[in-house]
Length: 74
Image (cartoon, rainbow, N blue to C red; front, side):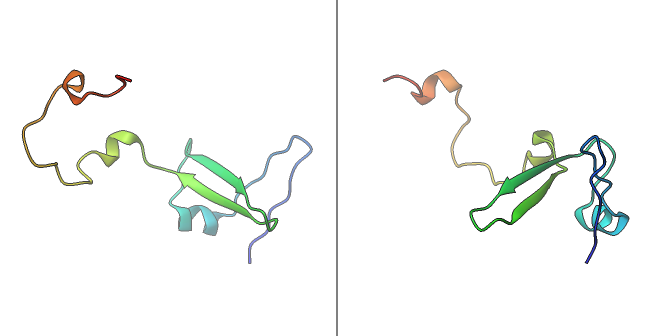
């Protein structure tokens, strides 16, 4: 188990072992999600949208412009 203290400015230093386990680097962002049972889920936002490109296979067929997709028309 790892612990950290909150400073008078509300800052916390994340223990090095936790930073390594989450793959955190300088300037990475974290999200905190309070759960109904009182626990808090911490997630590291270490990927940008650009890194996700190509993660899913391309859909079948030819690419079409957004205007031809019929989105937002009613």
